[in-house]
Amino acid sequence: MKIAVCVSHVPDTATKVKVSSDNKAIDPADVSYIINPYDEFAVEEALKTKEKFGGEVVAISLGSVNSKGTIRKALAMGVDSGVLLLDDNPRDSYAVAKALAEEIKILNCDIVFCGKQSVDYDNSVVGQMIAELLGFNCISVVVDLKINGNKVIAETEVEGGKEVVETELPVIITAQKGLNEPRYASLRGIMTAKKKIIEEKSAAQAEILTEIITMQKPITKQPGRILGDDSSAVPELVKLLHEEAKVI
Image (cartoon, helix red, strand yellow):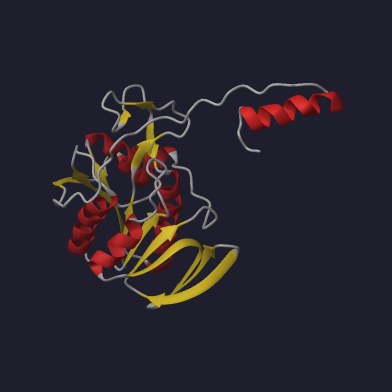
């Protein structure tokens, strides 16, 4: 079975993010980057699928040469090889999906795993777009997966509950937290990853359909105020809610 897993190189959620001077991107200075957390669930499920059915797992990432670090993390976990689609320019979700889809088509994959979203832009649409571009089936926000021959049965999260859906290979699976427990890279895995191949290619060109007009950090919240500790504070509270907060 040929298995692909798409991994994204994203800012660490613990990093203090600054907006660049043009107010259209994140300032990369002093920002630590990691593999997208949701993609770790995708990598783990790809490896479990290989362990059950055999085959090969290829990690694909799009970005600058710095994205090699994220591919190496997937290789250290047990992925067989990696493909880096080089492009230093920012892309929207469609352009990312287009480049990934073109590579997946070349690899002739049976199943593709992605995280349900990346933690930088949170658009949650790349996996579905890849499926549309390739004509693959797609199941999103998966928390349980079973494959029996050509049949795929998955449990997904929906508003207010869960549902079980069935489809066939080839398929795109977008992984949600709870699908599995990602394995830690062993020392042996880390050392072996250094010898594994990461093929570098120019990313397929695609039209950029959206544009970031401006980016800004959230407005800093004002500190709270204690007006009193008994009923005598109620008139002042009502006044402030009316005149300052303007909620009544």
